[in-house]
Amino acid sequence: MTARVGYHLGLTSQGREVEQATLPLRGHLPDWLQGVLLRNGPGLFEVGGYRCRHWFDGLAMLQAFILRDGRVGFRNRHLITRTLEQARRSGRIEGSGFATDTNRSLLKRLRGMMRPNLTDNANVSIAHLAGQTVCLTETPLPVAFDADTLETRGILPFEDNTTLHMSTAHPVADHHGGDLYGFGIQFALTSHYLLYRIPAGSRQRRIIAHLPVKTPSYMHSFAVTEHHVILSEFPLVIRPVDMQITGRPFIENFRWEPDRGTRFQVFDKHRGTHLGTCVGEPCFAFHHINAFEDQAGRLQVDLAAYPDDDVIRRLYLEPLRQGWQEPACGEAWRFTLDLRDGSATRTRLAERGLELPRIHGDRCSGRDYRHVYGTGNHVPGALTDELVKLDVRQGTHLTWSEADYYPGEPVFVPRPGADDEDDGVLLSVILEAAAGTSSLLILDARTLEEQARATLPFHLPFGFHGEFLPDQG
Image 1: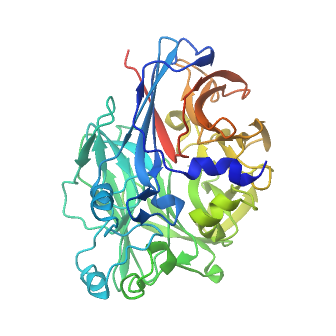
Image 2 (image 1 turned 90 degrees about the horizontal axis):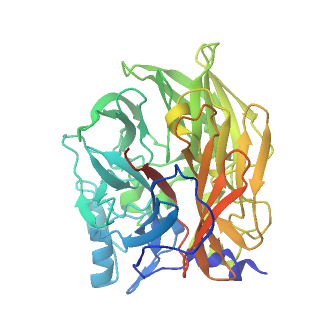
Image 3 (image 1 turned 30 degrees about the vertical axis):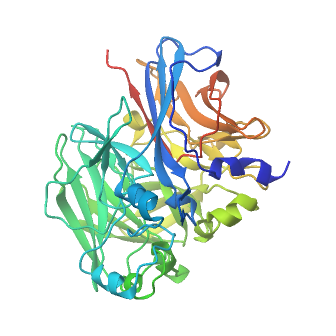
């Protein structure tokens, strides 16, 4: 079977919005698994005359799998944003996407230097902000929605005067009190990285540190430990003025400069002090796996890493739909940062690679840990064809795969009261290409053995990230 009649279905639009109280279920759900899996990702790749060039520019769609009383229900809704409404109305968009040309004139681009037209197509992740559930992307425009109905509520503006042009789609929750940590970039002749903290229940970003930079790096995520915040500056950098004068889409203005190495900017989490820069081998990553402080006082930063930025170019839709000839996942790399000498030493954690990494976040985020789960790839021509569990201490792995099935991000849900780090289940939305359908797969997180599968009568486009909201009580 060729790739074109395989995973490419997950890169096609799903215009339907449905509600189904009960899906056909094979197997049995654990009695304790009660709640909702929320998923975010592209749902539409063309609207009217608008066509996405890159996977990351697909227009956002929310999915909810409702797991209660041994049954699984489903609903989905497109996120109603200015970007979607504009595409429906005029067949084009004005806000800057990731890699899709907005066809803005030079005059409009120059005006954008003063008043940037940021996209609200929040198609990446899901977070909780000031008591509301929001969708996020790499602009500072969180879009709130009703977690029960999936109805869009609109942009949830921050209550501060901070101007950011780019913001992480992966804020990190603090173990103590529920504060959110994030970072953003102010683009200018001299740009700035800004680190901020959002107190629990607040919409105010309190700036804890800023760092001037001439050529900012593209950073999708970052790392937070008990006492430190780390920005991983990959050598994919931009001259901000290029965004306004070249007319190219956002990401195509970045340049790969491997001689810079990967620069880890380390900050004191509480005082905001810039503690130093550690420099390691050049690499690129979308996602940090985890980070923590070891007993020797060094920082361990784990990434799903690639040797360069070529993965971005391989995710343009036209070539991606034709077939994937390279590994579609990063390698699990650990950089050991020593602030005393500024070194960042790389080791490989396991032979198997992964992408879309997830850990037992409530227990292990920012702390020493053992297990990480993700999507993997072992057959040439497939985007993602397995789920992977890595033991980062032993360097071993387990996998789940079935022929012609293509899984998405595995969300770990711990069993209530569990002692072991991997005592729980994994929830992954999988595409069955031959049948043209998608299913919710439930695996035992310890063994990766299937426990249950709930199947939809149609396909879902591949999503990016999700969160499980357990029922209260």
